[in-house]
Length: 284
Image (cartoon, rainbow, N blue to C red; front, side, top):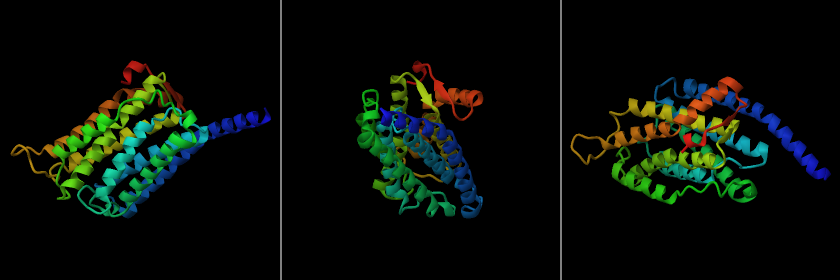
């Protein structure tokens, strides 16, 4: 009895510290991003792509804060995390040794890759908690959106639509597949939210919002570089690769569009430590 009371007290204290940890994570990110932009990238525009990956990494940091402070993986989709892990693995197979899809400034030499590796490690940590150590808190029945057909579809589209920036068909295909996996990874998370009543806690909300911001910045970079991204065209004069890349970015933002409205509204009304109750029909 006493042990249960002490455990509950510790959990309550951890939840009280969560807003402070979130604020600290944002502060550390801002300092790190400014340092990379000014001292590594020397203010080059292409650093926006590295900033996008740093924001994505921050999103996973906030999920880790949520999981560790609550002692639970409730509200986190393992299927979404699995797609993100696959996305990072595919992209890193290209970006760790080829230059085709990297920022042209100095941040593309090592910072970009280090950030993606950190993100992958965070995702694997969360997957470990969801599937092993904290499986009893994982909402497995609700996290049931089929992902195998989605993975197969992404690979097929990547084979057909990849660019040729690496001049290596396999690694160009893997990079494109990685982009597609990252975009569709939003679907299982939104489906889980819908299945569990449409309630989003602060860290999960920040996580989804940061993924949207990351995708927006990445899309800005890709639009700016649209004339530099090349492919072997299926139709003469039509660069299908850049249209596939830009369409993937737009699709991701459309998927998160409804959430974005409720997120902004919640932050303005409740601050960073908010709780959103969504009309479930808006999420899927």
